[in-house]
Length: 225
Image (cartoon, rainbow, N blue to C red):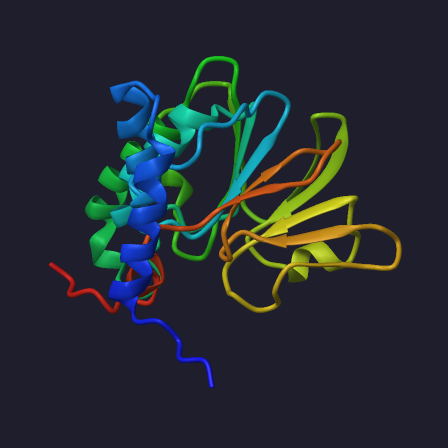
């Protein structure tokens, strides 16, 4: 009977595989690969002509999100709501100032020259607490239909707003259920809480895991300070 290796054994095996792979590489490249290996930064990718879909982002993962955007630089970012998901405004309306500060931070992270940003606000967002933003931002409260990178998208925080008139690509968040799926008419329904998805309308999507602790923060398992 095979015995599942312990976490220490698995990490030691990865390290033994990683060290030979560094031979002949520059120090900068070794450091880069090491940071990818430990999960500090994502793989470098070309995001030109692609859409990055994220959702329900607690403040603890903003640093990783900033690093991801620098290394991928997508043409479009779609956030399907709850910009600061560890600040539950619907439950704790007294945390408006915390939310305002977090919203300012994530808007700064998402913004970049020549990038379109779509924000589909969630139940823990408030439009009047968002900072002033440039014309590159499109903000919707319920659902919005857009053409992005040559394909039709329907975008909302809630899948319920999607299902009555779905597009080729349908992006939502709010809950881990339902999981992402496709239908018989070749339409795609992507849940942004599962992972950060880089959508290429002309090729397969790429995925980036949310950092460790993201779901705990979403569920407020971290102590509120």
